[in-house]
Figure 1 (cartoon, rainbow, N blue to C red):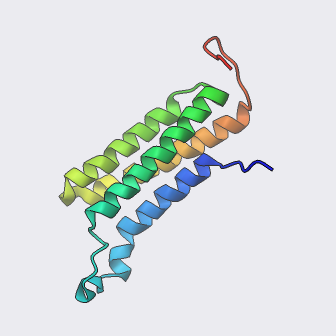
Figure 2: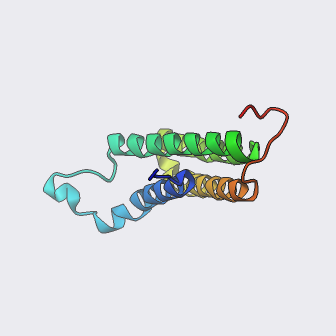
Length: 130
């Protein structure tokens, strides 16, 4: 039996996990520095979450484009959201202003990709080589 991974669902989950980490974790875990733990502003964790979003999103959108809908729209929306996530790491004073729309754009891109893949189960166009 072959295991089939829904990459859009995984991408949505990773984006939500990132949003929860960035927005809610400081509220619940504000006492961690008292115990010598700092995962709230941990650059390694932040970069890891952004890298995970990039890997999952890139594969998901490539697969959807190549095998199903041949539309760049989900990838372009994802790219804009991903750019906002990267900018969030550079401009720390605007973290929430960049994070929230970035995550919303990434989740929206995954939803559009998922729906497009379901509507165009296996669409062929002139550039389709499979």
